[in-house]
Structures are given as C-alpha cells and as structure tokens.
Length: 168
Image (cartoon, rainbow, N blue to C red):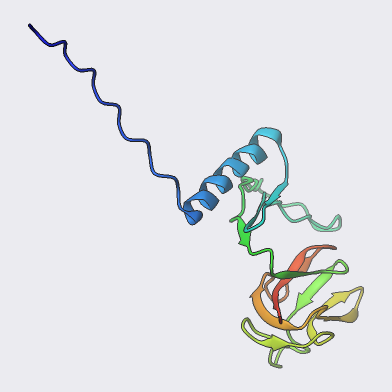
C-alpha cells in the first residue's frame, strides 16, 4: 500500500515582537497614517508606552524678508523621530510663543541639564516673547529626563520643553 505524500509543513508562526520592535512597528504604521491622511501629528498612549509622531513643518518666513533670487527647493515633509515616552514622566510645555533660552545670558551656565534634580517652582529656562524675558518654572519636583528644545530655538504655545521624572 502506497502512502500519500505529506503536505508541505507550514513555517512556524513568527515569534511575537519584543517591546522595542512593537514600538518601531507602531511608529511606522503611524507615519503611514500621517502621510495617508495628510495629518501633521498623531499620538497614541497605552498603559506602558506613549508614541507621538509629528511631521516636520517648514518655518514661516517673515513678510518683510526679501524674495530669494533663485527658487529654493521646498524641504520634503517627513515624519520626525517618534517619541516613546513613559507615562510616568511629566511634560513641561511652553506657556507662550517665543524663543527658548537655557541660561540667563549667553555666557552663563544653563539653568538645568539632563539628569539634574529640580524642585517645584525652580526656574528651568527663559522664553523671550516681545523683548520680555519670562522665567519658566518646574511644575513638579524630580529629575530632568530629557530637554526637548535646543537653545535659541523658537517655540510655540503648548510645545513640550522638558520631560521630568517626578520624585516619588
């Protein structure tokens, strides 16, 4: 009696992705959604991770600036690097539009650096708005986990400036 040939074995199912691979895959999917729907930002948060993907936007040119003599190529809009942030971190956002400064003067040391421990209401930076220097204070005590803005960079209302790991 002849045996019927065995059907070919299906490959083993792929192993479930690790935490980092899941975040990378989620980031890729969110970037695709940005492009597909023409969105400028998308954010998803679950109990253990927060992923935010933003599309880079060209800076506005003042109306009084002279027109360039040669046409400049417009920068391609591309998703920025996504932020995977622990939900335990507190985000300090810009309370106004202006220019972000890490120190009180160009020659002075910064108010804070990443890893520094800060107290509630301690000055973290200055935002210059309409020639006024506004001190921005911490809303919680804790450790500076990340500084999200470069010195001298223009910031917008609600833009994240610092990530602070609160003291427990």
